[in-house]
Length: 415
Image (cartoon, rainbow, N blue to C red; front, side):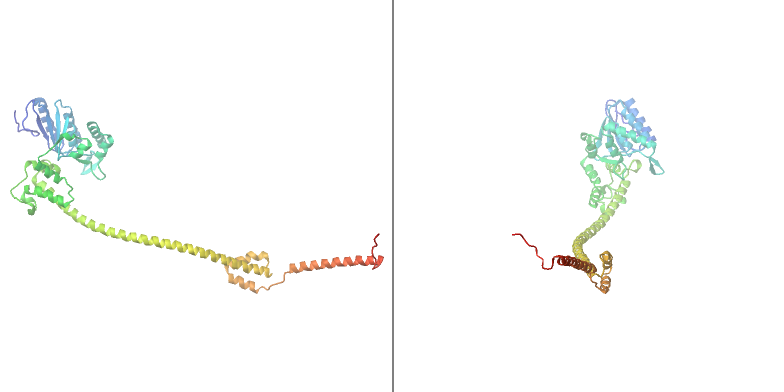
């Protein structure tokens, strides 16, 4: 058994027939991939271990370079185990997916999203990224037995977010790793990670994180009220764990940078707490306004009902008034016709006049003198003349009879 200090990725002792460990704890770029592949080939071709355990803590990087690592692990003739030690993000998740068996620390995170081109600090999507997206989607679908729709939803993420972050528990639920392959961590470290993963918008949770971590941070980079010992510092395990949570890799994974991240989170939490207080006040004001609005709506409803009743009563009154006016006009005009002041042919004209101005029509009709009914008088006179004519003819016949037979002539009857 030998231990080689010159390797960058191979860690610990290694020998033929025994497990070997190689760590991809960096970004996926040309230089890191070339070095990793050289050391991986060394294990396969010269050491021939029983199993190669690839430990991953990477934020990802180049799709093209990462595919070289993925293919190398997939084609390896020696059994491989890929272990997500802290973070397997972007192409880091693809490299992790290449192992014959997949494992994940219980505090680790898996991040999956759509590839993009970085142009002057801005994300851009083109034909190449569309092709890469289909390539990665195919790997996720075939490797984990998920549907294309499931993979697309995970890669797209929620609206306004870049992809999807999955905890170990969520990765099990989605089918990325078996529950038996979740690696439990020591209780002390596990408690710190669980606290750190809580919703940082709650100031109480932020204080809980500080209470657990602050004693191990350098005294020069944190509020003195939260430090119980100025001589204590983070151990390597804690630095690795919290660096992975904050996406710190390489030279950035230091206690000072982790402390700065905690301070940044605390500042955001304080701001969130103030915003929550303001939101609560606005919510109270809104509730009061809604209550007033409800009362106003009720009043409007009652007034509307009263208005409808008044309109109904007014309609009845208006109809009665119109009927009375119509009867009054008809009476006025019909009386004028009866008194022979106007003829029946003029009735509609006088009706319209009275509808327009009743008093005017009344005054005009009052000034027209009443006249006898000539038609009736003439008719009666004709009847009297006819009667006189009949009597005259009868008298003429009677006179002729009397001249012939005598005035006292009587017909005799036979007994």
